[in-house]
Length: 382
Image (cartoon, rainbow, N blue to C red):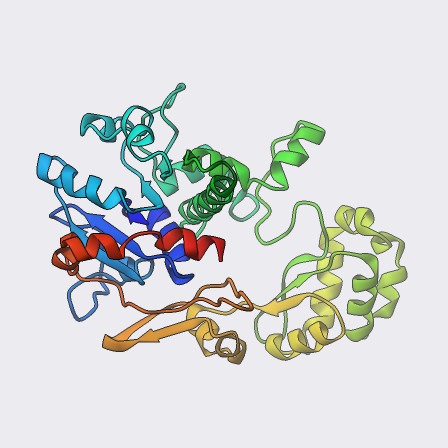
């Protein structure tokens, strides 16, 4: 796989595939992926941990694609590649004489080309740059995130970039499966704008049904109650009750079984209509409990809930270790493991994030070209 992408969506996509066996060659310009400087914190080589978070299991090659020599080296690599991913501004590859439709599809007919852009190549916003926070604003995500009565807020993670990377990986795998039937490559497109819209559930379906724009509800669910954070004796507890039986179990465990038969709370529709009364009742019952303790008790009897952990708490949790969700490699690298667990071909963690251009000589040698053949298809098709 030839990875021409930088920042987050594309690198996250290629790391997913790399963790599952693909050989990923990361092509960087002479100044490198800009996220190498997105710190502090920086690792011992001076590279930002932001970059390290989505670039393991890759080899770094420096090419200046604005030059004929750089494009020539890229074409040599594409001759043995299954996949190329890029997130250049629309028209950039064409300017270098490497457009997919008129050049790459003709010269490399089995190549899967994956393109990530902000808004696509055409339409009212076609060709414009897109960034996670801008897309969160434009696709309604910020409008539904925040406390009731407060202003819109950015989600605290780059959710649009990450889901775009996931969709890019899915698209690549779909195209590889189809190529196994047709023998032909194709172009896979995913945009931040489309992906931002795609995650607006249940807000878009609700709007389709009632025509009303949703309001911010903080930690409360717009459709379900009790489904929010509630005060306990020592902190907040998130409760996510999805049906009447779970609500009855919750009430019984907290010593207030009568609430389940109260007509104000008899079903989800009534609970939604009496949210604040229910909150007062539940928080009174929870006042004598510790959040972390009662969470485990409730989960054990079938009520979905959990304490609100910070990042350190997540890493300290024994279940995080049990699920092997932290990777450690030589040189002080620690990273977030793959959440995909295959029974026969589990993820593998072979290479720490590369230094800029670390593998240029290795990959651009004739032996390096031959070694790069076919890696991504083997990993994707298992």
